[in-house]
Every structure is written in structure tokens, then in C-alpha cells.
Amino acid sequence: MKAQQRALSNPVGLWWRLLTLVSGANIVFWILLYRQLHDRAPVAAGTTSQTGAMLLLCAVYVFGCAFRSVLPRADVQRICLVDSFLSSVLVGRSVATVAELCFAAQWAIILGQLGHSAGADTAVNAAGVILPLIVIAEICSWYAVLTMNFLFNAIENSLWAVTFLVVGIGLGRLLPEFDGPVFCLLVAGLIGIACYLAFLVVVDVPMYLKRWRAGLLDGSRYLHPLEGLRDTATRWIVTHEFDHWKDEIAWMSLYFSAAVWASLALCALSSFDDHLSRYRVRAAIASPARPASLPVLQRVHSSAQPQAGTF
Image (cartoon, rainbow, N blue to C red):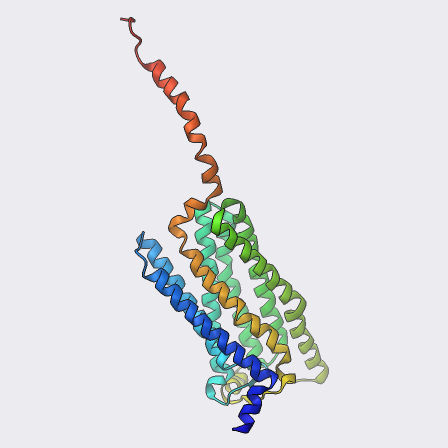
């Protein structure tokens, strides 16, 4: 009991508590969002189904991240905080894969939705490459986990960087098309993506490359994928040492907080589907010009009418 209390009171234990608290709040936010969006009166059948799909995808991501927050682990190192099969890399990586694919699908749906609404082919094309890139990234992640080769973690995160660079280009193309709350959400998305890309380029990818180089110098042996599959299911190392977790804390904290908030925000943005025309900038500019053309039409119509005394 005393050992458990000491584990919870050290820096890693405090960080773990914070992760759990944030994840609990995220679940509450999703429930509130579900009640707000799912229970509203449907405007169109297509809108309802898309909103339902976004809520489902968001739920998988929110609850998946909550699971991983309660049972944190570092895949290649095989370390965790709770001695349980649920903390094994096989379980945790499987949950992460499904959750991340759902998160990517959310971005693909929202970019496609906004792109079609604005007639922006750039955004529509960007939406089409998101899932294929993330599927390749997940394959690299699994290969890194099974073989314990950090190089493939670096490739995985580089692919995430490429994906969100493409997403950023799509969002940037949409900026001139919208105003109001949609414009504000697009700007917030671009700022978040810029910060995420900076983190990947400056911190995350170099960290995995450094670990890979260190493994080469140490002569570390890579596992065969089948050997690694068994290893992920049967071996986990419980540790609360700060030195073992210090490089994981930054990315996990951002992943289980800001990334989940982004997923929730995408749900909220998808609910604008039937109101997007209200926030179209070009539609708003074009509409005042219509009354100005009425007198011309009236003059043409008047000239076509027979004048008194012509018969």
C-alpha cells in the first residue's frame, strides 16, 4: 500500500492522475456534445447520418485515448504503469490503431464536407489522401513495435507530419471561402496544426531517430515480427521511474488532451453542415449585387410592353 502511495506521489504518478482527470473531462464533453447534436431535430437525412458518423468516430477516439491514459505504456520499451494484460502492447497498440484511424476519418469527412460546400477541389483532394497516408503510418508503427526498431517510429511520425501538412493546405484553401464561426474554427485548426508540425519536426521525430542511432551503436537486436507479436502479448515492464517516462510525458500529454479536443471540435464543426451557406463569403458578396440588376431587367421588360397609341 505504501509503495503504491509513493508511486502515485512521484512526478510520474502526478502526471498519471492528471491524464486520468483530463480523460474523464473529455468523456463528459463528448456526452454533452452527443446530447446536443444527436437529439436535435434533423434538417436533412444526409446531415443526420453524417453527424451520427462523426459522433461515433469521435467516441472511439475519446474513449480509446481515455483507455490509454488510464493504462499508459511505451510500446517499443514495453514499459507500463499497471501490471495487467490490458497494459500489454498488443492490447494498447490495437486500441490506438482503431482510434487513430477514426481520428483520421474525421479529418477526411470534415475536409470533404467543407471542400464540397465551397467548391474547393484542393480541400476535397486533401481529404482523399488522409486515410491512405495514416494506414501506411499505422503499418510502420506496428512494424516498429513488433521489431523494436525506432526507425519506423520516426517514419510513422513523419507520415503524420505529411498528412497534417496536407490537411493544413486544405484548410488554408478554405479560409477565403468562409466567415463567422466557421472561419474562426478554421484559423484555430491551422494554428493547432502549425504547433503540431513544429512539435513533430523539432521534438518527436528527432527523439525516435536518436533512439534508433543509439540502438545501432549498442548493437541492439531487432526482433522478427512473429517473435515480436508474441513479445507484445506476454511481456510488459511495470515502472514508475521518471527517467523511464520523461521522454514520453510531453507527447502523451498533448496526445490525450489537445488531440482529443480537436476530435471534439471536428464534431462541432460538422454540425454546421446545413448552415454552411450562411457563412460563405462569396455567397454573401454576390447576394447584394442582385437587387442592383433589377432596374435593368425592369427597363428591358418595360421596353417590351406595347406603348399606348401605337395601334
